[in-house]
Length: 417
Image 1 (cartoon, one colour):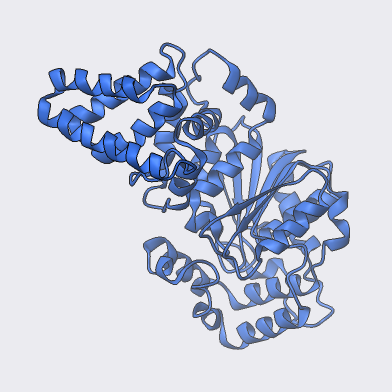
Image 2 (cartoon, rainbow, N blue to C red; image 1 turned 45 degrees about the vertical axis):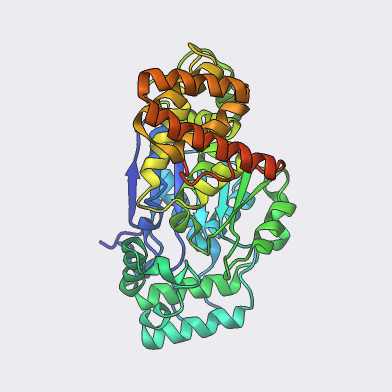
């Protein structure tokens, strides 16, 4: 018997709030792997494959290629509702990329009782001229998805990123996609237009745009955010259409903040009780807030923008552990923590980190004179050569700050933590 459900994967605690993730055309559910570890800590995450993509049969969508095709966004939305019903989920949060985001917009507008929170990533209320999509569908039906491979670098992500293992794996996903399933999804996009329905959406909505996305430029995201009541918009610098893959940390942080309830975040940020084991989502949010307060927005934004799939787990680790657990503790004030940090960095000769934390210590209330006292104390216990190097680093930092007094306090640091 043929399965009438999309291929899907479940991750996360079975009793956690449900979150469904929808993919982009030409990709499998693997497109969400950079976000999965963080999202699955606090959610029961269901990822699904489009028809003909990954493990889903192409027959889930009709593929006659006519202008009157019954392959519509409502057909895909019905597949998602079937998956939710199978899990016994009356309500669920939803995030989707591109066509996956379009499914989310349709669900939120036409089934508002089912969608608790929504995020659309690099998506649109209307994906351009229907004729373009019908032409693409005809091309893929005739030549297969190999016909799309050459155009994906520069659209999905930068050409350089396309050479990375992650980029190459996504291109192979495209090659493996069934031509009939891909073409049917093009038919869906040809008839899709949610422009008039955006105002119906009542679920709290986050719109994420890649600033360098040629497929769904930021203007498309702004149209959604302006029309959906109360929607928020985040633009990701240095990201094209698959922003969550090319800039995973920035997208993950935005999604965590959105899908963790406001009440929970506020309770965590104002509580004197240390985070509980497993409370990683709120720990990440608290850590990001403290990290920005100490190091400055410009520094953190650069660190997030430079995150790669290789460094994403480390960025998540330092945000949750160093900033979300150690720096948020109430056992020491931040001035004292800065003094300790400066001494440790001097002892180990970490000059780049030292420069960053000299600026941070000024933010935390130390004066230049007090920083000098810390460096003098370090000369006794860490050694004169180490202190000599530290004084040179501090002097350079002060000179740079005096020369550009309006620059962010962390703007010259080379170490993006």
